[in-house]
Image 1 (cartoon, helix red, strand yellow):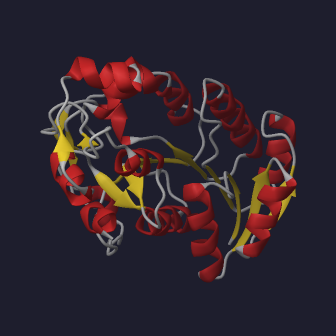
Image 2 (cartoon, helix red, strand yellow):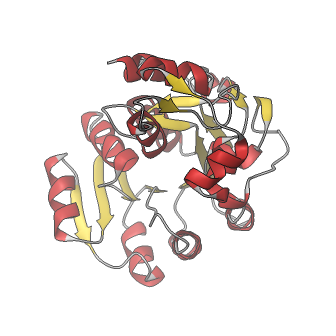
Length: 275
């Protein structure tokens, strides 16, 4: 297949480029810089440099592919604008489209499935109107919603959690650490994206969760001695919006993804942190 994607030089996107090229697909990655282009080329993809905020240019690249995926993010408030533009480009190109969401969409929930009611924290509430547009676009659409992504020493949430230390050398928890985080290894997640792209079907939401849902305390103890916080202390340290997202108690099994033939097999986040 000819697959075009955004975010091909990013943490998840680079894993996906490598996974797709290993599987024999022709990958075109839309990137924003020469450095990103070099990274994609090193993974076996074909980089195309341009402005992802120009929907007409994005649509022209998407139209040359058999299927497209959007994984790019800016890391700030402009991500919502980027997503809306890429969705418009995908509609114009008319190819099977895979969008990227996130597990926080479902809020506090001990058994998240794709049919669970949405209740996102303020940090990611902007996703709801964007994804409603995606689902009503008339495209053949799937939306992959990863859990907390980790692996190879990366992943912004897991990595910053492991690196945080108090003056006394302890690992500060987010809250008292009793909440669960639902997790997925970046390489397993790349396999899920590949499976979804290869199927070319309108699957709706597909949760990318390995079924491993450790507590924050368990994660902290994998790194060292821990220091619980009150929610107010976590908000003061991390900011209200991020802390409220990380205080969510979430568990998911990823049953729908497994029904597609996905079998996550990489080490757990606890094992990753211990190493």
